[in-house]
Image (cartoon, rainbow, N blue to C red; front, side, top):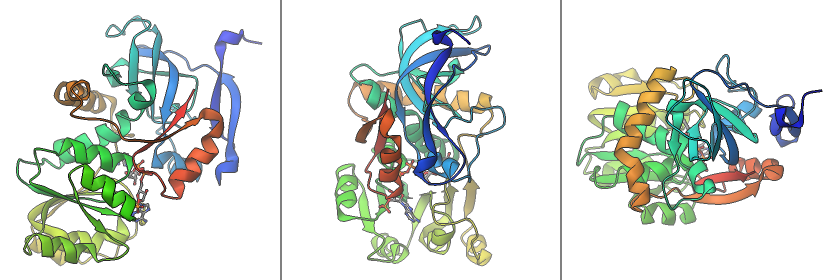
Length: 331
Ligand SMILES: NC(=O)c1ccc[n+]([C@@H]2O[C@H](COP(=O)([O-])OP(=O)(O)OC[C@H]3O[C@@H](n4cnc5c(N)ncnc54)[C@H](OP(=O)(O)O)[C@@H]3O)[C@@H](O)[C@H]2O)c1
């Protein structure tokens, strides 16, 4: 039997299915690989992808932990000889490809960021996945330029609430789709023009509000069910970045509109990105935006904090679309 220090608590999926497959277990601590740091996890962020993984639709990339969880905040416990950026005891937040629902996580130091001063662990854990996804897809891939217009679907999601803050002062106008009036209010406060997609056709509303021009960029986590309307909503030469498939993956496409609009359609996932590219995104985001959290120009929107022992309740809240912003597990 290994000593106690080599075991940790972790939430694992015992097979695929509903939240009853989530089990709290004692498992061996992860092995520290060259270039990595070991983090004592104080808070883990929940993501929609954790639910897809639980349902068997989104396995971790090869070689990554089977334990769910793609972001954590905590304290550096240990670093490998090749890792030099952080010291034992530093308060950090990190982007993971898996292994975040656990008391300890090991991650390449290039995917680790200091928690901005003034933020607690729960707020730190709400930053990496949502803000890096928004940053990568809107700025690095979507190439948003000053005074362009933007449509963000699922505006009150973790990713949506991060995206709305990042585009302030860049986009001239940002539309969001949301499911409830309460979410519309939250997005309005973040500077967006909400469209209640269950009550109105979002493409008609976007065209009406842009004098039939459409928007320059669409950030779309919905996929198939929105595809036609997205194309209608896009301006000539516009770009659509597909980051999720909450509305399905099989679309019946009329490619003529894509061609006539000279539109660009991009697909992207952060989790499976090669490490070198992920490091670059983390570095470039950190340089441009980390200071803004300390100045309070940016703030992670935390919906609700649960204890790790309540992970099933936490995932149910997300699955029922009740969150505005991020749901966090506390360790
Ligand atoms: N590609 C990447 O790298 C990447 C990285 C992170 C996240 N993502 C994707 O980004 C999306 C948001 O992630 P998150 O963790 O921030 O999500 P979240 O906080 O759980 O929010 C998702 C929201 O989407 C809306 N929604 C759910 N099903 C929908 C449907 N069928 N049609 C339209 N709207 C629907 C709901 O809001 P309403 O009540 O307003 O409908 C729901 O609350 C997910 O699709 C996720 O997979 C992609």
